Image 1 (spheres, one colour):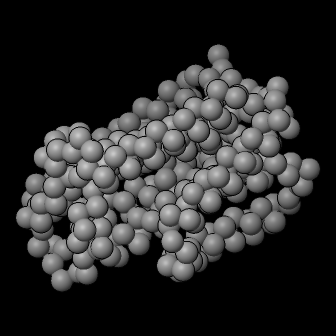
Image 2 (cartoon, helix red, strand yellow):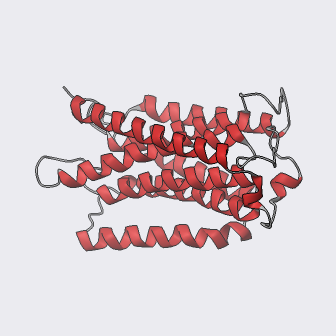
Length: 278
């Protein structure tokens, strides 16, 4: 992707994220916790799962854990734009396998943004419905990444345009179904299983196309998710916990998981070419 295009997308993503932050800041300043009154409280709130203080008087019950979700928004807008750029360039210039299926990148970007609002809703309200949407956003992002990896591992399979749209629609339906599936299988089993599947497919694809893949991106994605899990565990166990601090382990989890997911996406999207071309 050309430097000028990348810079344009980055700047646009930054200002859209800044605008979203301004909206959230205003909402937190002018609204209070009464907005969530009457909604069923999540188990997480009842057990004080995370370190950050639950300030029920404020619209954002957990301020830092809410704002940190803007990392998902920034990367979601960026990847959504990349998908739209790829769609615009179809038939104009040669494209790799990921570029040739822009709908998958678009769904990736939408999943990031969905997770942003779902997780923000949960940490702002600490309600049961917020928790369900938050987890569904997490599964949505992970399922799309697994699908991208699967699509590249079975690279010999060529899809028609109609088949591509059907597959994307089925993936969207699967994400919705995970609202129910997530209630049947504990997240401590389901989410790690999906992450391990992603790592497995990523490893297979690296050895399939070692000369065209960035091993650094694959390793970085793995390291970031391992560190993220460690930081989240420390936060849940209240190790080094300061409930009123601007630093919160779970907020860092949001940033690290966002970066890990982006590295996984870039591993496939920029295969065989530089991230930024002259």
